[in-house]
Figure (cartoon, rainbow, N blue to C red):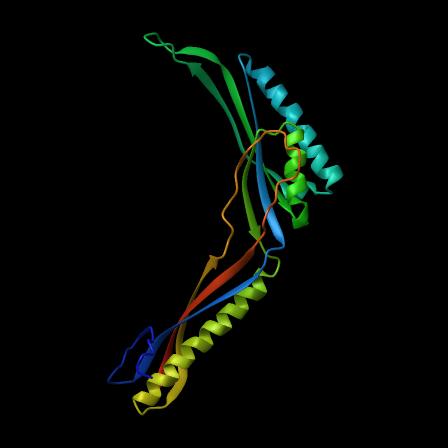
Length: 221
């Protein structure tokens, strides 16, 4: 076929003929898992007061996630905790210390993906300052990875068969295989500056996928 473009790397050895070909495939599946990060920021001239206010808001949010949405302790973790001074900068004067700012960020794994919108709405009403990244994944990722790898190998073998036929040779055994994977189709992370919402936001979970690549060396005889 004149217009057929084959992406391959051909290596012929005078002592032992072989061909090296690249195969690629992409497999998608529906997202059924998600992780959500959210944070609480408080500030006060007294760092202890700032920390106490922050803890109260965060504890209410976490208690609700566990009780209302049945999220387990193991699925919640602290991803960042910062205590920093903040200043005002009057024109022509030295910076003025205004107090301490606390940033407390949590990441929660969500197994009921349809709860995401409701969870976001719940967190806003509990005083959460910001919703960070929402990342989607699949519980079938291992199966998808295997399927993609098999299809990539079939793609490489098909190319090698074509090359062997053109060279009037026969394809022999596999001499070497290299593999790699890339994630694809991940929905872009979503960020929200929090204000109390009258209704839950619409979240499209989309699909996630795997790109498998193989480089296979076949014997040619």
